[in-house]
Amino acid sequence: MRDWTKLSSIGLASIMAVSLTACGTETKSDAGSKATPATSTAPAAATPAAPAATTAAAPANAPVKLSIYTNHFDDDTSKPYDYAVAELKKEMPNIEVTLVPGLQDNGQKIKTQMATGDLPDIIDTNWDIMQIGSKSNNILTLDDAQETSQFKKDLNKGNEAKLIAPDGHVYGYPYAGTEFIILYYNKKLFAEAGIEAPIKTIDQLKDAAKKFNAKGIIPLAIFSKEKWIGNALLQGFMTREESKGYGALNGAAETPEALKLAAKQVEELQKAGLFAKNATQTNYDQASSLFYQGKAAMFVNGQWEIPSSQKNLGDNVDFMNFPAKDEATYEKAKFAMNGAGGPGGFAVSAKTKNKEAAIKVAAFMARKYAEYKYTQVGTPIVSIKVDKPITAQVPAMLSRLGKEVIPNITSFATVQNDTNVNLSIDDNSQNLIVAGFTADQFVTNLNKSLKK
Image (tube, rainbow, N blue to C red; front, side, top):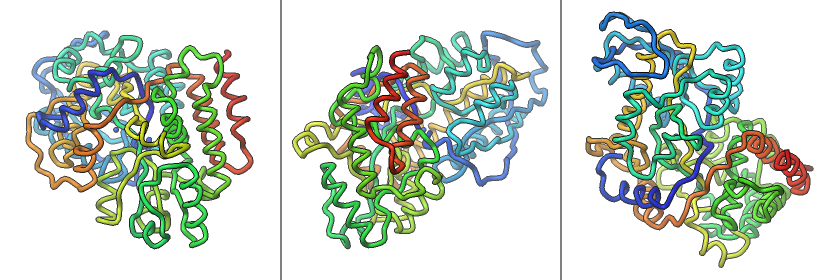
C-alpha cells in the first residue's frame, strides 16, 4: 500500500456520502506474490480508445496478449484482481492477460524495468512511480483517451486527485478511493497484559511496548523491509500536530516542528522496544503472520487490511487511531487521517505494442477491481461509482469504519510533491526503526533534501 496527493473539502464530504448512501463506491503494500503467474482471456472493446499515441488498428476480434504487473499475494489483492480478469474474459474474449506478480521491494523492480524500458503492458502503481515513468517517457499520458473522459464522469466525488495528478495529467486509472493508515491491535493480548485500548498517548504506547516485551510478545509488527510503511507510521504521528502531514513540506526550507516531534517520538518508541530487532528485514507476509498468530500485539497498515485481519483474528481484532503527545491533542486530532488522495492505479507502458487495447483494459480492470471491493468486501472507499449492491457480510471493523470514523473525519494529510524529498523521508524513516539512528540525524538528512 501507500504514497498520496491533496484532498479537498469536497473529497471529505463525498467519502462520507459514499459510506452512507451505497450509491456505488489500494502500496496496500507493493507486496510480493506467492502466486504462480496466471493467464486468462478477455476481449477487445467495441469502441477503441483515443490515446495520445496510436498504432495501426487490428481486426476487431484479433487475439491480443497483455501483461499486467500488480500485487497478488493475499485475499485483499488477489481476489479483486482475479474477479476483474474473469469479468474481462466475458467482456473482451480476445484479450489474453498474463499476471506479473509484484514484489515486496519498495518499487525497485519497476524502477529497474523503467531504466531498461522492459515494462509489462499495464502497471498497477502509485504517484511516485508514475512521476518517474512520466519523466522518463515510460508510461503513457492518458489525458485524451476515451476511457479517461468516461472515468472522470464516473468518479465518486472527492476522488479527482486519485485520477488527475498534481501536474494536471492522467497517468493511470484508480480503483481505490482516499485510503488511510491505522493501527490494529489484538484485544485478547491487550486484555491479558492489562493494557487499555485505544492507546491515546506516546507514553502509553511506550509503556505498552515494555509490557509486551516482558511477556515475550512483539509490541508492533511492521514490514519495514518496504520503506513506505515506516514513512506512513511517521506521518501518522505527525498528523497529531499537523493535519497536512508531509504536505506541510511543500515549499519548506527546513523540517517543520511537527515532523521533528514525530521523528523524536519514533526514536523514543524504538528505544522502548516497540519494533522487533529485524523489523527492517521483515516483509508484509512475515509481519502480518506475526500479528495473525498472536506473536505481535499490534500491526500497522491501511484500512484495506480490515478484511484480512478480521478473517484471521475474528472478534479478537480491532483498530485505533494514532496516539499523540497528550490526551487533549489526541482528542482534538484523532480524526485527522493519515492518508491522502494521490494518483494511483493501472498505468500503461509507453512501450506496449497494443496501446489502444492496453488503455481499454487498464480502465476496465480498475472498474472491476473497485466493483469487487465494494460489492464483495463491502468497502465504501473506492474511486468510481458501482451500480451493483453490496453482497458481502461486512466485517465488524469495516462497519465501525463506516459508522464511527468516516463520518467524523476532519481532514486528510496532503501529498508532498518533490520526489527527492520523498526518497529522503523513505530512507530516513526506515532508519528510525533501527537502534542507534536519531531524530536529529533524520532532520539533518531531510534538511539537506529540502534545500536542494
